[in-house]
Length: 370
Image (cartoon, rainbow, N blue to C red; front, side, top):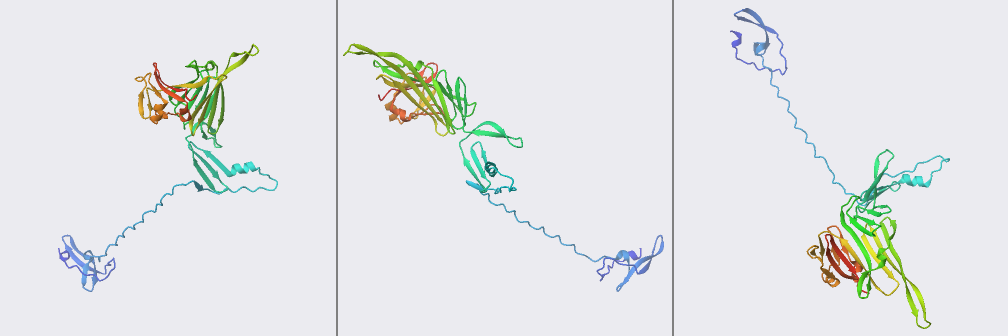
């Protein structure tokens, strides 16, 4: 080898990226002698293969631009009112007449939900949200697009010749049985579990020093039901005509027959906000002292003044009004979901009696106070 042994690396002043052959160098090897392209500069003549291009520094890689963290605003919780798009009533040619009711329907929308009411006023651009008691779903209505919209009500009332059924998701349910003039209490919903199987009440009278059930209890009950947005008032009335009383007039020796009757009225005020309030009224033509006695079918235990009463173990035990007042037990816990508040009835309460006859019962005897 001849030319290839050169180790001098020429310094190329040019910054060009290309070198052009402008000369030749004769090279001899084992295959022969050749004129090889070369280039000449101020330092000499060199083979093109010996040219080293000038060093070009790589372009610096730019640092990635740090994007700022996205701004996430703190959510603003809704208050009682919020603004919505204002509704603009449409304009019509003079020959068209718009009925006020149609304008009102277009300008306002009311949505009834399971536990709220939403009123949207498109004229004021305002929506008002009102929280309500839990409502119960009663079927649905169809929207213009064909979708089903649930119908929510405070309660649902059903009546037949045998029963009056009140259902709610706020205070549970009540089923009044007309043939027996008694009722049961259920948990929330249409299929709520029964918590009090039976509540029955009898009119009583003090006859010859003994409290007895009056004849009026054997009569059929005449039931009427009135209702409003908050609930129902169920009035059950029993009446009976008794044998007339013979009154002898000693002055003229004549006798007069005086008609005798008894009336027993039970009023159940079933309110989705206040629960069930029960009132009794007993009338009798003579001076017999009157009262009522009520029997509740319960579970195996109740609580009186914080004390758990085992019905079967304490069968026959009585707690008088003084015990109830001393132990601040004006409210009895009948079950986990039902409390019994004596309210004004405490004035006439005489005893709370515990009964077990294969069923668990509590008898409330109102025969005090004359």
